[in-house]
Length: 115
Length: 116
Image (cartoon, rainbow over all chains, first blue to last red; front, side, top):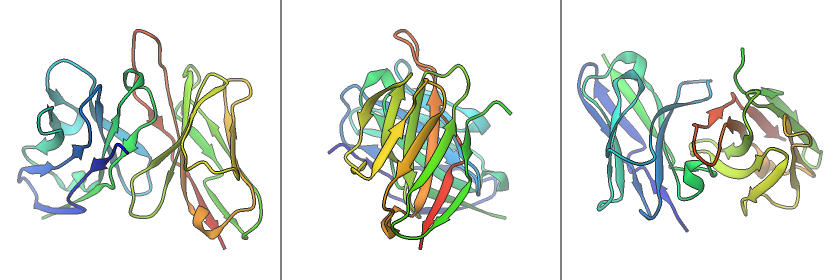
């Protein structure tokens, strides 16, 4: 079965430091990739997506991610984090329908920003 | 507010009872998705509709679960004979999809189900 792996369940980072949240998936055939953020007691919000084209994708709130087909990875990065970035981050993948089919999510990474 | 709405936001029920949740998507969106999220896990896909047609169902959607989107607008998810393992957050999402374009899935706030 196709799967998404987020190796880090929690990532503590000091404020203004850079951060990378890792995501790996099981197959690179016709893959469409997403990162969502979930703030406490709120719904999921899309940070960025890769459907095709440039492998470096920029999203909202200063986040970016790079699609690496050979390593089947889609890691999320931010050069300088803020307290407001504290949230749960989910990597999601779909392997068909031009990106419009149901998503397979990773288990999430809790980003903890320390002052 | 023109986002995805879900009702109720919270539901507590006793084991064996039936429950029904409602999702109202963004008005022009033609696709509607249901997901389930348990504590400490990412959302798991359950099913989706293209207009009123249910196009895909996950193996997670047991016979006790049924979803409808009768007029291609709002959708309902019913769970019959609830079990404690059904306790979760049920998320709805919608998107506008055509043959030539893709738009993101917009998620609602979810309905939290607790089965006692």
